Length: 373
Image (cartoon, rainbow, N blue to C red; front, side, top):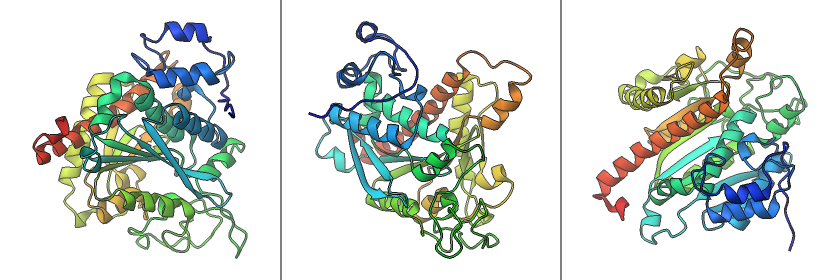
């Protein structure tokens, strides 16, 4: 049997300490599932980091982590990796499920789809893996699997992510090389088939905002769309997790929001944000606005607009995590509280759980409470 090894970066707890901490808070868990504990006991070395949120995340570590989870905790997780990027990296579709799913309810449970990393940032990918960790590792989150099916695309731009790991310049595109002018990359966050032509055309392939010659031209956007189509009959929420922000943003990225009734969108986002701000008391309040208002300019071809319009999903959001730019500024003037990143991470997970609560409440109302079975 081939023994896989999770290569993380910093030293942490020994196996002996790990065993004694099963019933205490560990990697954010109040009580850890046996399969996850067995995975750590089998694969983890003394000088390796057991909690995914503290690991150095590259495409290789994503691959190893998901393979390890599927091997040891296959009752909770299945992984599909049929699609490749231009540079032949895998795009992962992760399905999280209750270990004893009811055969009837399995096919009617609401689906919550989360995807991360369109713009090649590390924080969204790490947060998506953290969500997977929490749902698989922590016994206290079993109801989240009981009442909904979770589909997570944890790294939707691995080529761009790998390039940005080793270069200081900000990089948000994928890494497909154009045969015409040898320019590199398309901004896949602008490549979806919704309002694609409503923004001024960007013809320069070297532009950081180059959206491609046509919508859905990239392996990454076609992959995300195929997954959406696969679950469209049960899809009840979609969140695109992106970097450098602290907000839950509702449609629209283009300037055509006047075509829709946006009051309901605003209200739903505001309710979720208000609960999280009140509970966690962030230094900077989690904000909510439209994607257009946040960017202060149109962002056409946006996946959130695509999901809202094409799949009729009112729970469609862009979620920005970790104020990278603001943190650099703030830390020049004051020291952030110890563990503030942990507080942010838990708070962001709280946003996902509040969205889950809203989705499941609507589902149970429509099914007459069958979701309680």
